[in-house]
Image (cartoon, rainbow, N blue to C red; front, side, top):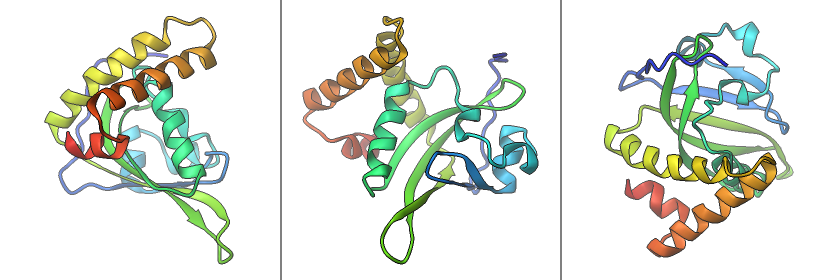
Length: 169
Protein backbone atom coordinates (compact mmCIF):
# COMPACT_ATOMS: atom_id res chain seq x y z
CA UNK A 1 0.00 0.00 0.00
CA UNK A 2 1.58 3.23 -1.18
CA UNK A 3 1.38 6.26 1.13
CA UNK A 4 2.41 9.74 0.01
CA UNK A 5 2.36 11.48 3.40
CA UNK A 6 0.40 14.28 1.73
CA UNK A 7 -2.79 15.41 3.48
CA UNK A 8 -5.93 16.39 1.63
CA UNK A 9 -8.12 18.81 3.57
CA UNK A 10 -11.87 18.98 3.26
CA UNK A 11 -13.49 22.32 2.56
CA UNK A 12 -15.41 23.80 5.48
CA UNK A 13 -18.83 23.14 3.97
CA UNK A 14 -18.09 19.75 2.39
CA UNK A 15 -20.13 16.77 3.51
CA UNK A 16 -19.04 13.30 2.46
CA UNK A 17 -21.96 10.89 2.25
CA UNK A 18 -21.91 7.16 1.76
CA UNK A 19 -24.23 4.27 2.42
CA UNK A 20 -23.42 0.61 2.82
CA UNK A 21 -25.21 -2.68 3.07
CA UNK A 22 -25.03 -4.79 6.22
CA UNK A 23 -21.62 -6.16 5.23
CA UNK A 24 -20.13 -2.68 4.77
CA UNK A 25 -20.13 -2.69 0.96
CA UNK A 26 -20.78 0.71 -0.59
CA UNK A 27 -24.25 1.18 -2.08
CA UNK A 28 -24.04 4.96 -2.45
CA UNK A 29 -21.22 7.52 -2.52
CA UNK A 30 -21.61 11.22 -3.23
CA UNK A 31 -19.33 13.24 -5.49
CA UNK A 32 -17.36 14.69 -2.57
CA UNK A 33 -16.54 11.18 -1.32
CA UNK A 34 -15.30 10.20 -4.77
CA UNK A 35 -13.36 13.43 -5.26
CA UNK A 36 -11.59 13.30 -1.91
CA UNK A 37 -10.85 9.57 -2.10
CA UNK A 38 -9.82 9.90 -5.77
CA UNK A 39 -12.17 7.17 -7.02
CA UNK A 40 -15.00 7.14 -9.51
CA UNK A 41 -18.48 6.07 -8.43
CA UNK A 42 -18.13 2.87 -10.47
CA UNK A 43 -14.86 2.05 -8.69
CA UNK A 44 -16.41 2.27 -5.22
CA UNK A 45 -19.85 0.74 -5.79
CA UNK A 46 -20.27 -2.63 -4.10
CA UNK A 47 -16.73 -2.44 -2.74
CA UNK A 48 -15.95 -2.77 0.98
CA UNK A 49 -15.97 0.66 2.60
CA UNK A 50 -12.62 -0.18 4.16
CA UNK A 51 -11.07 0.35 0.73
CA UNK A 52 -10.27 3.85 2.04
CA UNK A 53 -8.92 2.61 5.38
CA UNK A 54 -5.58 4.18 6.25
CA UNK A 55 -3.03 1.91 7.96
CA UNK A 56 -2.62 4.49 10.76
CA UNK A 57 -6.24 3.94 11.78
CA UNK A 58 -6.50 1.54 14.73
CA UNK A 59 -8.65 -1.51 14.07
CA UNK A 60 -10.12 -1.28 17.58
CA UNK A 61 -11.86 2.00 16.68
CA UNK A 62 -13.67 0.22 13.84
CA UNK A 63 -14.63 -2.57 16.25
CA UNK A 64 -16.18 0.06 18.50
CA UNK A 65 -17.93 1.64 15.51
CA UNK A 66 -19.36 -1.71 14.36
CA UNK A 67 -20.43 -2.57 17.92
CA UNK A 68 -22.41 0.68 18.11
CA UNK A 69 -24.10 0.60 14.72
CA UNK A 70 -24.89 -3.11 14.69
CA UNK A 71 -26.60 -2.51 18.05
CA UNK A 72 -28.79 0.15 16.41
CA UNK A 73 -26.92 3.14 17.86
CA UNK A 74 -25.27 6.08 16.14
CA UNK A 75 -21.62 6.96 16.64
CA UNK A 76 -19.28 9.86 15.99
CA UNK A 77 -15.64 9.06 15.27
CA UNK A 78 -12.55 10.78 13.96
CA UNK A 79 -11.14 8.77 11.06
CA UNK A 80 -8.09 9.11 8.87
CA UNK A 81 -8.73 7.70 5.39
CA UNK A 82 -6.47 6.92 2.46
CA UNK A 83 -7.13 8.21 -1.04
CA UNK A 84 -6.48 5.97 -4.02
CA UNK A 85 -3.12 7.65 -4.75
CA UNK A 86 -1.91 7.26 -1.14
CA UNK A 87 -2.78 10.74 0.16
CA UNK A 88 -4.72 10.87 3.43
CA UNK A 89 -7.57 12.94 4.82
CA UNK A 90 -9.20 13.29 8.23
CA UNK A 91 -12.94 13.33 8.81
CA UNK A 92 -15.39 13.56 11.67
CA UNK A 93 -17.75 10.72 10.83
CA UNK A 94 -21.33 10.36 12.00
CA UNK A 95 -22.42 6.79 11.30
CA UNK A 96 -25.97 5.57 11.79
CA UNK A 97 -27.86 2.40 11.04
CA UNK A 98 -30.64 2.55 8.45
CA UNK A 99 -33.88 0.80 9.38
CA UNK A 100 -36.76 -0.66 7.40
CA UNK A 101 -40.40 -0.05 8.32
CA UNK A 102 -40.30 -2.95 10.80
CA UNK A 103 -37.29 -1.61 12.67
CA UNK A 104 -34.72 -4.00 11.19
CA UNK A 105 -31.27 -2.67 10.35
CA UNK A 106 -30.90 -2.82 6.56
CA UNK A 107 -27.68 -0.87 6.08
CA UNK A 108 -25.61 2.03 7.32
CA UNK A 109 -25.35 5.71 6.48
CA UNK A 110 -22.38 7.96 7.12
CA UNK A 111 -21.93 11.72 6.89
CA UNK A 112 -18.43 13.08 7.29
CA UNK A 113 -17.38 16.67 7.85
CA UNK A 114 -14.10 18.51 8.18
CA UNK A 115 -12.76 18.04 11.71
CA UNK A 116 -11.18 20.79 13.79
CA UNK A 117 -7.39 20.62 13.59
CA UNK A 118 -7.16 20.62 17.39
CA UNK A 119 -9.35 17.51 17.49
CA UNK A 120 -7.21 15.77 14.86
CA UNK A 121 -4.09 16.61 16.84
CA UNK A 122 -5.62 15.19 20.03
CA UNK A 123 -7.08 12.02 18.53
CA UNK A 124 -3.96 11.27 16.45
CA UNK A 125 -1.98 10.93 19.70
CA UNK A 126 -4.53 8.46 21.10
CA UNK A 127 -4.65 6.52 17.82
CA UNK A 128 -0.85 6.22 17.80
CA UNK A 129 -0.96 4.67 21.29
CA UNK A 130 -3.73 2.26 20.26
CA UNK A 131 -1.98 1.30 17.02
CA UNK A 132 1.28 0.66 18.87
CA UNK A 133 -0.61 -1.70 21.18
CA UNK A 134 -2.29 -3.48 18.27
CA UNK A 135 1.02 -4.01 16.48
CA UNK A 136 2.48 -5.88 19.44
CA UNK A 137 0.46 -8.90 18.33
CA UNK A 138 1.05 -11.04 15.25
CA UNK A 139 -2.59 -12.09 15.28
CA UNK A 140 -4.67 -9.12 14.07
CA UNK A 141 -7.73 -10.15 16.12
CA UNK A 142 -5.65 -10.36 19.30
CA UNK A 143 -4.14 -6.97 18.49
CA UNK A 144 -7.56 -5.48 17.90
CA UNK A 145 -8.80 -6.83 21.23
CA UNK A 146 -5.73 -5.49 23.05
CA UNK A 147 -6.23 -2.07 21.44
CA UNK A 148 -9.92 -2.11 22.33
CA UNK A 149 -9.16 -3.03 25.94
CA UNK A 150 -6.60 -0.21 26.08
CA UNK A 151 -9.12 2.27 24.67
CA UNK A 152 -11.68 1.26 27.28
CA UNK A 153 -9.10 1.59 30.06
CA UNK A 154 -8.12 5.08 28.81
CA UNK A 155 -11.77 6.13 28.89
CA UNK A 156 -12.31 4.60 32.33
CA UNK A 157 -9.22 6.39 33.62
CA UNK A 158 -10.67 9.69 32.37
CA UNK A 159 -14.06 8.75 33.85
CA UNK A 160 -15.90 9.40 30.58
CA UNK A 161 -17.70 7.46 27.90
CA UNK A 162 -16.44 7.22 24.33
CA UNK A 163 -19.14 9.66 23.19
CA UNK A 164 -18.17 12.17 25.89
CA UNK A 165 -14.51 11.84 24.88
CA UNK A 166 -15.18 12.46 21.19
CA UNK A 167 -17.38 15.47 21.93
CA UNK A 168 -14.79 16.89 24.34
CA UNK A 169 -11.94 17.20 21.85
